[in-house]
Structure formats: structure tokens, C-alpha cells
Image (cartoon, rainbow, N blue to C red; front, side, top):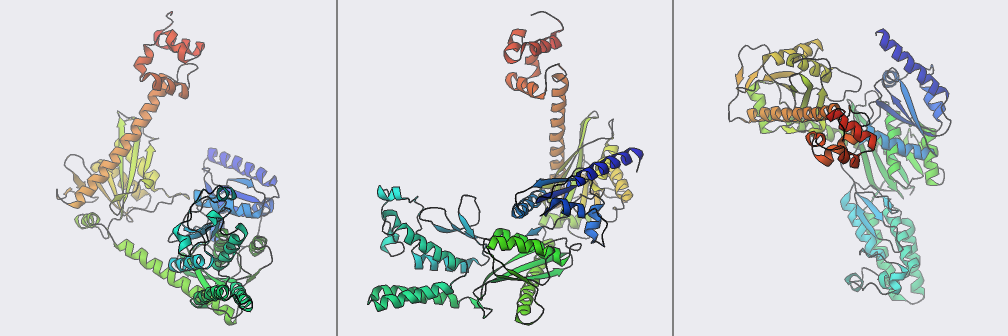
Length: 621
């Protein structure tokens, strides 16, 4: 490290120490940054001062991930929140948006549906995959869509929930704004739109429907039984028959649910499985002793994360999505921050709960069942990944054959330079995956070290910048690198790969523009691919896309430079004013032809004079 870098590091360390001394004791989130100002970790805390400072105190052994992270931290930023719950939500939001290197990233295989209960006088119940903060209540997510639809059918049959999208209020009922629809006549709705059922009675049905959706059916069975007996004693046999039929429907539905525990307690059971550097957590939802569904999360790059950390993150994710918190939670290991999660969930539930790590008996068997299912899902996930890797487009397979590559080049990166006589020197990198462009991975580079027309030096710079491994480098190495240029550019790129120790890990070729010749390192003769082959078309597509991307960036820089040198050199004219003039008059030529009086209509008097004098000397109006 040179003296300048040491000085910068010392300043950063002093600034970090000052921040650590003045941290507040409130709940909130903290963001660790590296020397480039990039956020590498986001965390939450009940007490920001104690939590953040604990990272920098001398303590016992820490895991490899934390040890590596600590060497990169040069700054910390905090956001204070009103509660731990708000901190948890904000942490989750920031992790999804920023994707910090040292955070665990949980993901699902798909978007699961929720049941939505609208916030209306006469609520509607529907299925949705989008959560909109409109005051509605969302229950879920549900992983077994068929069972969820059966449940929705039962709910509508038992409680006559309306399916229309009318905005029904006391005023619309009073003004007779709606007409009775077919659902009323076929006994699927009680017509709240015209006041045939009161608001209180309708909403009692909604409450009962929510019980079924949450898997709480035992209490409803008792209610239906009591009402059936009540109306029988009153000799109102028609009403008694209605509740008998409802009871039979509910019992048939309950029988389709798997009974897993005889104690009829609500609990969630979490299982964990790990294979290589990935993990899967699975939650079994048990309500009234019945298994009503499950949810799993896939976590990648887990080698440096403990079981306790993975379990903690899974619990936070799961209960952020769910309003219902059961009485008991069974886990294979205690979570990393058990006090935090217990306190948070108890407050969300409104009463105490138990987080249990069972060692023996039936409770341990439940955790084992969850873990076995998690392992099955994880193996299926790995199998799907391997099949995907083995699947390649015809053009990619043709390229593998024609270039004699050991495996299909599923990820290809192509580089190109662009400049005019050495000015505004830029390079581009485009990425194709399985033969198709992935624009999210494209990169553009402004050449920093080349001051003249030197394509070889420019290529060396951009290849070094792309493949020099940094802590924030997330892009994996490609299967094939294409250099748009002849032997000289190819040799320059090869030299850098050898310097970085990557030449044996990745294949690289050069493509000459004139005859579409392919140059391969170590081979004297160029390779001419068949003119009608898919492999040549794929390479040409990559080359043309890299050229287009580089030219576009070059034009942007040239336009910006022209704007800055021609107009923003004038006193009183900034970028915003320059853009305004160009938009108004269309070109610099027309701006130069304007009279002082015309300029004063667009600018203040002094700036107008400055612009006029810049183009016309000190000539008078």
C-alpha cells in the first residue's frame, strides 16, 4: 500500500471510529460500506449502539464470512426506526434492493398466491399473487393451489360471500344503485347489495371464513353443531337442515386434511437441509393438529453461514409474510437471535409463544419430517439446475463443436473498443447466456490509462478491469471470451488473463472484421467458420451487439463533451441552461446566429450578453 492509500485508509478509520462513538441506542438498521462506498452488509438491531460496536470489539472466534467482512468495512450508515419490527421490514427491503455481498439471500421457486379480504363495508374474498397496500387483509402464501381453490369454494358455499366487484355501502343500498344478480337466485349470495343481509351478519360470515382460511375449523364445527341442535329444538327443521349440511361439508373438508398431532395445537415446524454450498428450509403449517400446507426457501452460497443464521433469516422472512403466529414453533437448532425473534413474534401474536428445539419423541419426529422434505426439495432443485446447465441452444452447441471447446459456452462475453482518433476512448462488454443477450449484465468502460490511439493498450485495460477479482465482483467467469479484433488485440487480452492466473480457466478467441477470421491462442493459422453455420451467426451477433453498445456510449460521451466545451465554458451557463438552449433552438449553429435581444428572451441580461460576446466577440447589439 503506497503512502497516499495509507493516508486515505487512516482518514476512513478515524471517521469510522467517530461514528461508532456516537451511535444511538434506538432500534434501526445499519449498513456497512467498503472503501468504494458500496454497501456490503445490511443488518438490524434493537440497540444500534451495542450491536454495531460489538463487531469491532475483541471477542472470541467468528465465522470466516464475518472475519472477511470486517477487513472490508470502512464506513457505516444507520437508519433509526420506531421499533424492531420496522427495522426488520426495512432490512428485508434493503437486502432485496441492494443484494449486499455478505447477506443471506432467500428466494422462492415461484410467486405463491394469497387470499385477499378487501377493506370494505361488505368485504370480498379473492385469490391474488400481488400484495397491494390498500388496507386489505392478506392471508398466505399458499403453496398448494388446488387445495386453496377447494377451500375458497367451501368458504363461498358456507357463508355466501359475494363475488361481484360493486362498491357496496349503506348509501348505495339506500339509493337502490345495484340490481340483484344471478348468484342470489342460485343460492350463492345473500344479496348485500340490496340490503337482504345486514352488515353485521355478513361480516360474521367473513370472520368465520377467515377461520377456515387460517386452518381453524374445530370451533366452527362446534358452532354449526350447536345451531343445528338449537333450531331442531325450536322445530325449525329447515334451518336445522341448513346447518347440518354446512357441518357435513366442513367435516368432509377436514377429513381431507392430514392429521399429524393429536393435541390440536397450532404450530409451525421448520426443517433444514444443506447440500454443498446451498440450503433449503421448509416450514410445515399445522393448525388444530392438521397439516394445512408448507413453504420452502432456497438459499445459495451458504458455506460461510451457520445453521443458526439460516434458521434466523428463514423465520424472519416467513413471519414477515404472515399475520398469523402459532403458539409453538419447532426448530432443528435455536435461531441466531432467539431473544429478538421470540420478543418480536410474541408482540405480533399478542401473547406469549414457545420456540422449541425438540430432542426426542414425536416432536423431534416432526422436525425430522420437515428436514427430510427440505432435503428432497433441495435435491430436486440441484437436479433442475444440472439439467438446465446441460441444455444448450443449437447455435451454442455448434460453436462448441466448431471451436472444439470442452463444454458448451453457455455464457459468452464479447469486448469491443470505440473512439475517434483516440478521443473519448470507450470499451463495451456484452454478455450472451445460452445464445441470447442478457442486457442486465452488459458493461461499458471509459478508458482511463490510454491517451492515444492504442487499441492494444485499451483492450489490456478493459480486460484487466473486468477480470480482476474484487470483493464486490459477483459475475462469474464466462465459458468463452470473444475479442473483437485480430491477433494484436487477442494477444493483449491473453497477456492480462495470464497475469491474473485465469488463462487456463476460460477459453478466449479473437474475431477479425475483414474476413470473419477466428484467431485461437497458440495456433498460427486462423479458423474460418462455415458461412451458413449457426456458430458464425452467433459470433457475428455478439460482435455486432458489442459494437453497437460501444458506439452508443461513445456518442453519449462525445455529445456530452461537445455540450460542455461549447456552451458550459461561458460564464453563467451551466449544463441545465445549455440543454435548455439546445432543446429550444436545435443546434449550436442556430444559437450562434441569435441576436442579443433574442438571447435576452431566453436568459437573464448578464448571461445573454456573455453568450453573445462569446460567439461574436465584444460587438455591440
